[in-house]
Length: 338
Ligand code: EPU
Image (tube, rainbow, N blue to C red; front, side, top):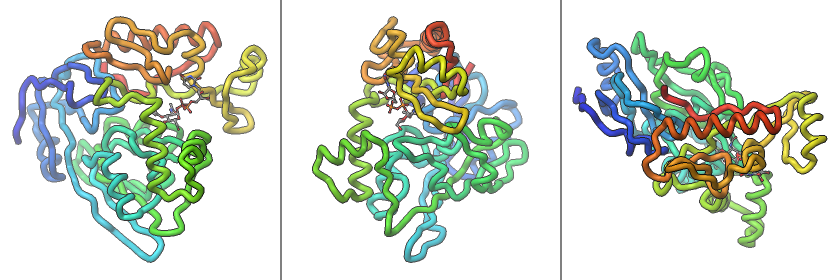
């Protein structure tokens, strides 16, 4: 096992936070992962995937295991469907581009989401009307204490909005090693219900879109609204969109009749946190190197050398302002490493 010392994590987290790993080990195989977990001299291990949904606020003293296990294989196939097993270290977007080249449909609306495939189920990533769970068949994960590989079905994963078993009961207990998807080979089910996609297709005079057209539309929309982490450090949406009950919603909408909202059940309404944050005047604001993105208030950005602490302080200030103005609590979607 090659254990490196005092490695900067700046290139390993999309926020570009320059924290250090005291001990760092790149894992490329399942047996390598098993061996690394058996290293008794490092009691605690810190699991690092694509680093796209975390805010590191200090140096990491535990052994950092960088999961870089690659590979895509076909498990099953018939005329209509293909079942694909994707190893955890495969970059999410590159994997989608590969599926589109084969004309496999299902993941196109989630194009350009940063990060690796293995971490996608943890928070059930989603965008433009589709969530990971819609194409998910199962995943395999190594139990940290026993190093046994276990299979999790969709039901086992208990997916919710940016939520799963791995964020709750399974937290800190498993490392996802592969994800299996069921994708269409023909009669693709296109999801163009999201207004922005429809507009984009219309603008380009595309009447009968292919899955590739949808992916291209999503890429164009994301590039306009969301900063590219290679150019400006960020972790996508920093906060989750809050879900409020009918009573709070009635009070809220009386005072803010122009607010966007989605009714998600008889008694629950989701309010876009980006709108709430913009109303509090934070859109495009910058404090040192920590800021709120110009085009999407839900995204916090690192202009270069912001520390995790500076980003957290800004997030806390925003959370307080939103609560004071609207009486609504917003919580981070990003995993904060304290
Ligand atoms: N809005 C504003 N100001 C802003 C941002 C948004 O007024 O600064 C308003 C928009 O006008 C719109 C509403 O808020 O009426 C919703 O905005 P948008 O469609 O951009 O989506 P979102 O709720 O901000 C969610 C996901 C994104 C995903 C998009 C598209 C969460 C936390 N975020 O954002 O996911 O790409 O929908 O499906 O659910 C991510 O998780 O990292 C992420 C980018």
